[in-house]
Length: 281
Length: 343
Image 1 (cartoon, chains in turn green, brown):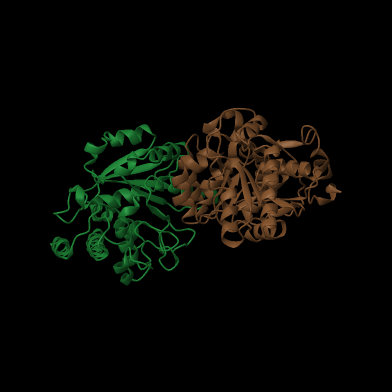
Image 2: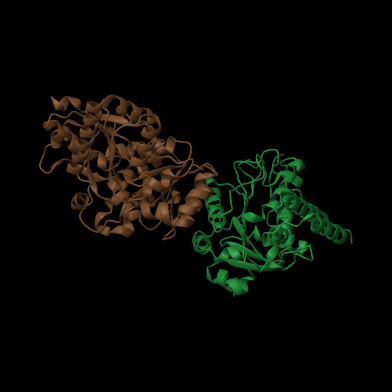
């Protein structure tokens, strides 16, 4: 049967998330550049989707009835690539080629190059609109797939996000769920210093969205919420997942510079040791 | 004698070339409305075709599609960026979205989405953009898409079309639906004469010689095709035999037709209501510069913003009228002949 959910338990998901975090550190260290902070904040969300929630078929990545995933904050793609490799879309050996010439793994997601990437991303503010298009198409085609779009909180400074928010409410796309990776940081500094955005939840409610706020690192809560939102009808839902940028690596957590800086080998070894130790506890 | 030189033109159109004013009494339609008619016909026979609007469905005429196929019509309001990226998402599922707006908004406001979410992944989105070139004449500069051909031509995976008249606009719309990948249709706001019939040999990427000639060639696109025909007709009264090419596809450019025209006529004038920076004239110059250096001149908006005004007087003021095209041909022919004398 194509398109089965994997249905991992919460404990298994936590273990997988730790493995993906290790992959992220190793990939970005090997590449010498990349975006560790936002990759680590979104890891638990992506892990829950690919290993429990989404109906996908790694042997047939373009299966027309699959659930869709868009990482609109495309710079966090190392976490997506690692999840796809762990899920069997392509061999893990590709992870070491991130950002290199001839690699399957581009610096930002490229749907024509990497198996399992449902939408090219990188320029912020596109993904929610693209997901909206997929959701409307699913409705037109009478398909029951669900579209998941992860956006960033810095990304919400793009006006196009709010264009999509208006349209999502207009068309009541209940077959789409936005997940806001609310890590409170952006490239230059803390969001509150660059462009204050509170009250975030109230903004989405005012735009006509069903808003659910969760701890974006509490796997049981993530899974429970994601399973529940798919049954909501008549309104688009956004899950605002409160996260920590650099989650799992204490020297990166909440530090803006780790948005776009690669760890060197010593730093990477330290990070891997911490992630593995915490997972083992 | 000169009447035999025309190809594919309706006899009425040939006769109307020498009318005063040219094309007087000839049936005419703004090609935005030709597109709107064509898309309804397309919707009837292709269930995958959907139309996306951005609050100009009445200005372009796609409101008719919305009325006929409400479930396949999506009005995004005044949010072209959202429309373009949503079109990309729809295209990933096999739908064929026609995203409809004005050229300035399609190619400037939403260019990031058009580049990164449509052309980079080469998704099957068609962009129908009215008010291409300075044809939004009375609306003024903010609505004159005078850079649209240049901007779209710069994008990899782009196919860029500016059809000359109502029937060929319909043919272009239907061809775009059959084409695998993004297509940009540059439509115009003002009525243009019906020059051709629906049996015109329209093929994406294939320029069409619509007037035979051996003294020079005018390579024209979109609304400048009709003015170029008038120029060629007037030049024939002075004994010049000028070829006219309907270069409806600016990209991929029919390089063979351009080089052949250069070889056979030895003098080239390009004509577009686009800026001369980066549009058809630039494309032709690139081909000739690399493959067959030939005396040439470009008619187009000369790297300036225009202004409000009626269409024909605007063309006159900014150097784009039929007489301007004819003068350019005379100059380039003179250069060709002086070059030959020098040999």
